[in-house]
Picture 1 (cartoon, rainbow, N blue to C red):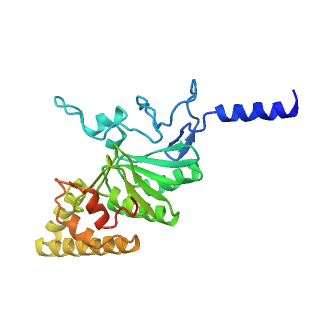
Picture 2: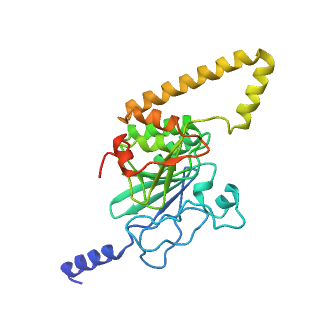
Picture 3: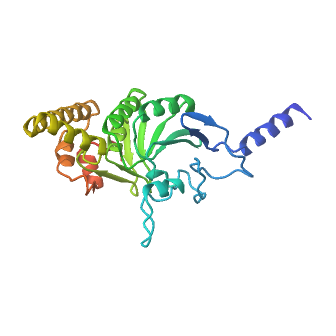
Length: 272
């Protein structure tokens, strides 16, 4: 084969190769991707497998809403069926669209997820943005992950069909560039520890040992310190301090979705 023809053939083969094949990260360890029968449109892939979304430039995930009326499955059941939004800890997957590489975070933010996120980032290699789909979780972990995102000067993104709620908000704020698609959900509520059985047991034990007034003072002190910690984080991330008063007035049991105007007013999103 003549040199010119050989070069042309090589270029054609390179153009036909699938460049958008997802790389799977499980618990911070790179896993070989499943073989693809033919070039396919980009899709988020993570274990357990889920039905492939329709072709698109960006992931088209299953909505994070619960199942249809009837039997209401528990979060654990939904997680086991591949609805990663309902898992107790984050799941990670790398998604490529052309030359752009995104790390997808799905699931609850649990204890130890900061280190798991750091490990996933190291395994994933160069990343341009973080895609978020999380019902929230541990505030401290959300703040710490957000600071890692900022240190790496990454973009954060809530795609169509994804939801970022509660502690996930603070991961999102870590982005240097932040945006929410029209079909993405950004929901807020006050921080609380009342859902933690360990916390309730600790309060009951302290009340028995030290009395109610002392316990109330300790709770007030911790709440004030947490509010100050969040305020400091908002300043670091160039988010309006008005956001603190906004979510502090929203009950944990009734999170509220912020509309596009509110997202801009609080400087949560900083691009159109």
